[in-house]
Length: 368
Image (cartoon, rainbow, N blue to C red; front, side, top):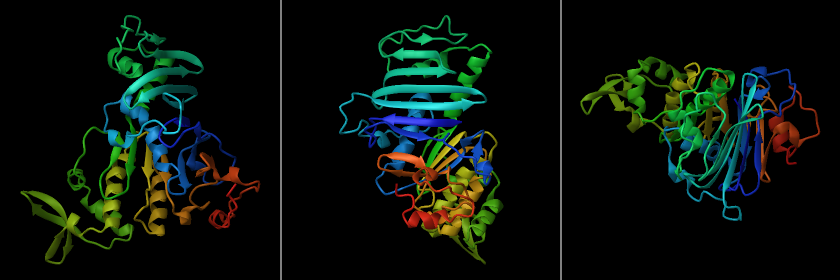
């Protein structure tokens, strides 16, 4: 799991910005929102322009150079902070795999240009790399690996991943768990277009995917549960079957008739199928997850996401779901004044299950 993330000199983050998922308390309610004392389900609140989306892009920067999964460099324009005098952006990730702690840090002078990397496991240096210098590696099975990247811009971690046959031991297992975690990270937005980062290498048709998996009836039930009263069926379109809304003997092509909210729900359903697959997605960041949703539907979506194993981070402006019935005060985070902290840290008052934290939030109790 991701336990802590730090970024500096990237986009809107001029100074060190720390997102710590290990700052939990001993609340006795909604314990399943944590895993081994780490926040496993989180909602982030913050004003427009505070950097919520940029936080997601920052976290997913490592996907760009450690994997071959879906990535869009367009979101990484203006890579370095415009006000900073530093020459490189700095990223620091802390992970926990069972009882082991892995820390991966690196610097980039631009998108796609690694300046340095360092990976430690339980405090021991495992990989150290500075651009133009030989890689220092402490992994069994890499003894004969060429450590000279000859000025290549490739990540040393990815180079090891693609070229070494690592022997079976505890350190190597933790290293492989880290690579597997990053391979399975997913960022998406619940808007009308299927925009995502990581996880897979191709962009499938959403309705085709639903039909191929035989999920038409389940999809119809999902929409009805979400408040979209509809009957779905199949029609032929461009020589192949597609989904349509059925009105007795008449039909309307699904994408032609679907509202913005229904399109957003369909996209969410598409990714939900992957999230439900056990151990399929390690970490998911859903930006503005309920942009088109009624507050009751937003609550339904959070409730659904609480049932999956993946570590989930959501951004939202919807305070109606800021409730101890859904999560807990160490799982709600506020971004303001160039920092992010769990809700309970913005007040000296001991927050309890019975507190109406939305009412407190609107009254300014967490303005800190």
